[in-house]
Each structure stands twice: as C-alpha cells, then as structure tokens.
Length: 396
Image 1: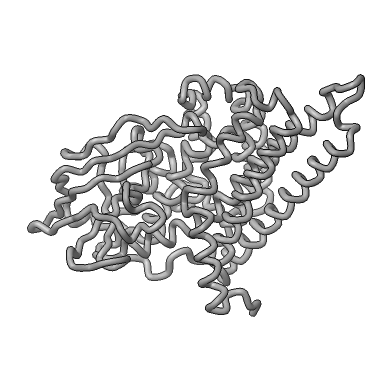
Image 2: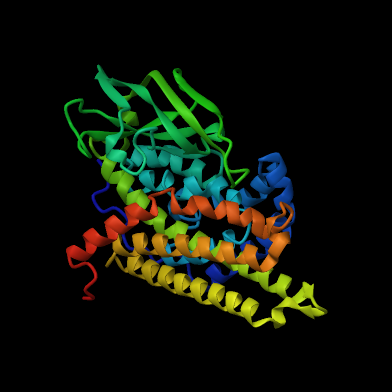
C-alpha cells in the first residue's frame, strides 16, 4: 500500500557529519567542477569522471533515506548542500537532482515496499538515473491537463502519449510516468504514476533539446507507443495516487530550487566583487565608484534575504508545520532574486559581461530557467495566495 504519511519529519544527519559533507562538496565543486565549466558549456556534457566522483561522494542519494543507501539529509541540510551545489553550472546539480528530488521522492514517499527495495538503492548509488515524466506539450503549468493514458488490460497497463522537457531522459534508466487511468476523469482526478524502464518496448526518447542555457543538463521528449507494464509498476499499488505524488514532490522540489538559486547568486556576487576590485577605469578600480558599490550592495542584500527565507522555510518543512506556503515563497523570491543579481552582475562587468568566457554571461542565461520550471513564478503566486486565504500565514 502507499505511504499515508508523505514527507515524515526526519532528523537528518548529525551536525559533525553535515559539516564534513558540506566541506567535501564545497571543495570538490570549486576545485574540480568550476574549472571545467567552459568545457561543459562547449561539449554539452558533464565529464564521466565528474559523474563517477560525485557518485562516490553520495550525491546521487543525498535526500534518499539511509536505509536505502542514501545520506538521508533533511530539508534544512538539503538547502545548505544546495547552496554549495549551486555555486557552479546548474547542469552539475541536474545530473543527480532528479534522483534526489522530484523523481526519487515519488518512490520514497509513495512507493510500495517492493518498489523501494528494487529501485531506491540503485537511485541512491547512481547506478540508475530516474526521470520525472509529468510535463506535456499542452500541460505545463497546469499538469492536471495531461493527456497521456494508461489503460488496464488484464494484469497490465498499456500507456500511450508523450512527455516534454523531461530532464535526464536521454540518460535515464527508469521513468516516473504520469498518466490518466480514468478516461472519464478531468482535472487532477484519475491520474496515476507508473515505474517504466526507459528500455521498455514502445518507449522512445527524442533528441536532446537545444536550450538558451544550462548546457550539460539534458532535456528531451519521450514518446509512449503501446508501452505495456505490469500492475506492480503502479506506484503505491493504487490508481489516482499520481497527482498527489506529483504535487508533494514538486513542493519539496521548489524549496530545493530556491536553495540552488541562492548558490547561483552567491557565485555571481563573488565573481562580480573580484571583477570590480580588479577592473580599472581612469586609473582606479571600478569598485571605488559609488554607483558600482550600490549595485554590489543591492546584490548582497537581495541574496541574503532569499537565503534567510529558504532556510526558514526548510526549518518549517522539517518541523512539519508548512509544506506549501514556504516552498512556493522560497522559489518565487529566490528565482526572481537570481534574475536581478545576474543582471547586475553583467552590468558591473560591462562589455566583458557579454562575453561567453565570462562566468556572469553564462549564469545570466542559466538564471532565466529558474523562474519557469517546477512551477512558474505566476503559479507560485497563485499557490501562495491560496494558502494565505486559508490562513496558512498565521503563526501557530
């Protein structure tokens, strides 16, 4: 049966272990990944050695419970780790983000015991890559509009449809496929989720999308043509668990994305400060000019405000007191903040900020996507408003 208590309160790891993890990841990101960012940009690929070393550090399973081979970090610890992961190209985080987040968490919180035992150890170790196959061409901000269907046929289900913008599809081993199992249902009703091996007959992964930014993070279309899966592939062992699973996974994912935005903005600010101290105009560092100083001050204040909100929201998530208002607020504030910080970073760099070899140029392009995926800023505002009208903002 499905887990009836999604996202139970977890203590995470002890503080000493957490600090060791953060220090290790911080050093690895800055010493091994940052120097290869241009290579990743040019090749549109994370080097295999980086993938292997990241798996050895446990990064494919930081949010997977320890009993399944993961690190078992709680939401606050996830946020602190994400600050470090976000310091480099976001495609690095995307390599294992779906395993820990929207795909892996569907299994962690809604999978049957058998499904967890079969897949979570592989997901946590990096042996298997999981993808979250929800979005469709005409069902993005409103996933309840999906048209992919799963029809019961004896002890099996037959899936037909297509998905769009699916992260890691081209390298995935298993897909969390959302499909309508009740043809008469509308909206969020009648939606189920299935575990579908990517190599299953009838599954076709399209070519990698060409995107504005985030090179090295692959997204693709996926097509399902009479894909037959056994009833045991129905996540949670029940129909109609799917939409609830999707929304719960996206809620926590929004908190994580907010933290990644903080990491991205931290990198932009660091690089912009260094540029301001070293770049000269009229024989003086541009950092001496008050208008430049004002831009740096705006960047820092904006960043720190978002960081504080993310951590406060993560704390409430761990306490079990807020799992909608805080995540949506964090993603809205942090992703919009990142756009402003990236823009100011380019402005302070001047002409160099428009050059591909400059980090702020790349992060400026990377930043634009954060206001779109896992719920656009406009969707976050709707979620926030609905929670406010329910009184969720009142502290208890």
